[in-house]
Image (cartoon, one colour):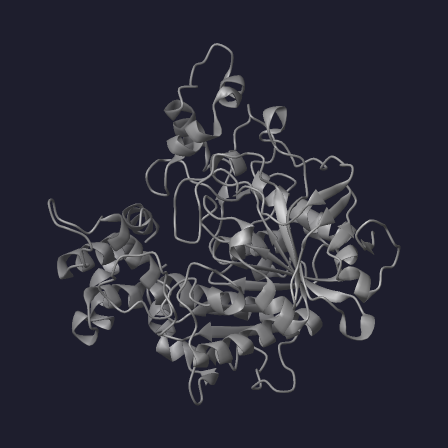
Length: 537
């Protein structure tokens, strides 16, 4: 089925320092002094924004700008500065094309910045747990400052750190003549974690209690860091949202053809000065435009296995217990793939010539999509997910693809983790979750789509507001996530009980609004896991 999956993807992818008061530096600053909004990092002082219930520090450099000779090199320490650096505005995002409403285009390579959100006081005067957030975006979109840390910082008494890392061809180009690991974006994540270890105490955080969390490509990044030798000891719990560790990454050999195609696309193949010199002479904009969106070219962004940075594939590492053994919280949304079908509508790829957008997925296109994904097994999938059982072809396709691409792999990854470490699994199931504000009408219910849970965990400006019931669910989610950050277990007084996952019980916590909305769900049955296991791999 592997070749069929590749054809399907090509069709769908388009879719220790102290806080200081103003004017001075005090070692071991007290909580009243923290409220001044100035902190000392290893590179110098930063002044953030003070509000009634939290402090935020934006655009703090955690590494030197990877420009010039530092392009396609491991991240280097940021330079020190004199005076007090303004930390009230985010730094630029890493170079990327226009993407989702959560993202913004950029041509900047000076982008290795992070953002810190912290409560104004520490209850009991103790250092607070730290949540380091790795954004999603298929390794070619996204930036940290989209994800405001106030919800968890205020609701759960934690310090939240959101991170930019190199994307696309500037973050994941693997060629011997260019050199380096090819996993420069992942090396950036490690550099950010080392910055946290060295500096987070100045913001009230505990460098010995760090939770590494991410969604989608960010969850893949968490998987990779769980397997990467140099990430050992940099974090102490892990949260993986809407991705598993079960899909093997590409090897360096498997990326060669795509890298060659990218080199040719920017006119550097056969360059007399050498490919590496030619590539370094190309602008960030030229490189990201040549790479395009996933599925548009032979080159694809993402982590690569091989070499000292990532010697073992995360899929193998998790299956065999050769990962950094920390407590795990992992899960999916109920209707993950509806976001991808919306992407098909949004880009117009479902429209016939001359047809005005939005164009809904047709029954014929539904059959084509299933055929591209499942090949000889298409008839079995169609029989299991008949069009007549769903309101629209979009919902039927999404149900099958959610179960195949997300539900089964994440459930099986949770089972693998649970053999070695405490593991808790969830399903976010609010099918009325607010959708993006800047979007044309959608032809089908978007449900609990991919990324739907994020506006319940972060302060964001891209989604419609939460209702009163959804605000209560947001408090539950933030409570679970931050309690897990505190203790490695999401359970605490005032929240519904959440049973630890094991392969025998298969306990999955449903997270939804309404009476009984939070509690156990029969995840394997609802997502047809036995059926998917019956198909040839």
